[in-house]
Image (tube, rainbow, N blue to C red; front, side, top):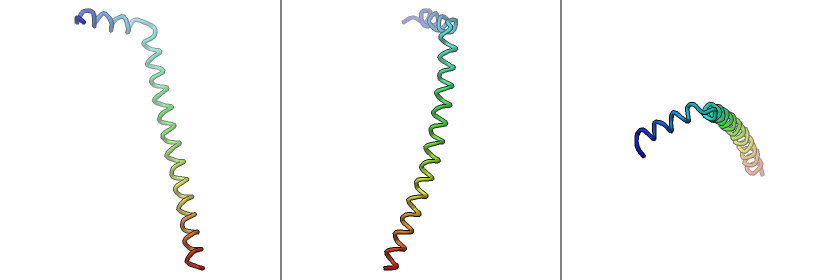
Length: 65
């Protein structure tokens, strides 16, 4: 592929209306992924705390017997 053909392809892409739409979708996808990571992280921390409480309660019950 020649350099001229490659530059013409980029020019066509930038002038087309699909370019900005693709960028908007990419930004929305990045935001959705960020929110998902934050939610999964919060859920993981909450679940970890619950398991720690269960383990502590279970160990205390075993040592009390």
